[in-house]
Image (cartoon, rainbow, N blue to C red):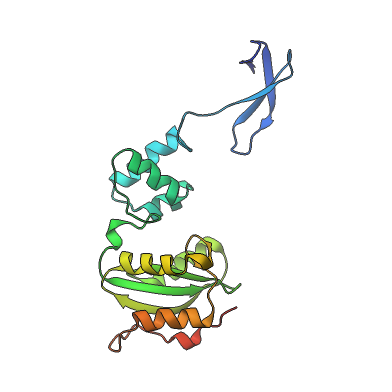
Amino acid sequence: MSSQCPHCNGVCIKRGYGRDGSQRWGCKSCGRRHRKRAPRVGRIPLESCRLVFGLWEAGNPAREIERQTGHHRDTICRLLRRHGCDPGDYRGVRVALSRPGMVYLMKRPDGAVKIGASVDPARRRRQLQRCHGYAVELVDVFEVDDMAKAERSLHLSFAARRLRHEWFSLLPRHVAQIAAALYRPADNTHLGHDRVVGH
């Protein structure tokens, strides 16, 4: 199988694959190499775009689309906004989170703490463990009136300590600040921030 060189119109032969899995071609005449990439919309291949919009129209949130397509939710959100959709106003936090629920703190083996929101933190913990392949400890849970607002506020407050996405390098005093800000005396879901061991 051969291809035509876009530089000299010579005959090209296969020369391996690029990092994104696209076929590389090398020209037998001029020696230059090129790749034939699938059509893209921004950073997302056209076929993946169709999948993204199909999942979105089916009612899936940005985080679920991220899980199924492998594209980061920020990229997905930019694509959706470009075509008139509203995935949320901060790092893919969906409109569906703007309701009562739980803000949780989870810790992975290296001590990094995840600040997230869910109506079922225990289920979210199991999802994370299956996804990442290591134990995740559910450290603390707080009941809030607006999950998106509370989560966004904490992410902004600790932006300087962000490691990646929703994972942060938090000291015990930072966790105590979160507990003081969100703890409700009558909240039976609170687990006690003294269980956290910082690093």
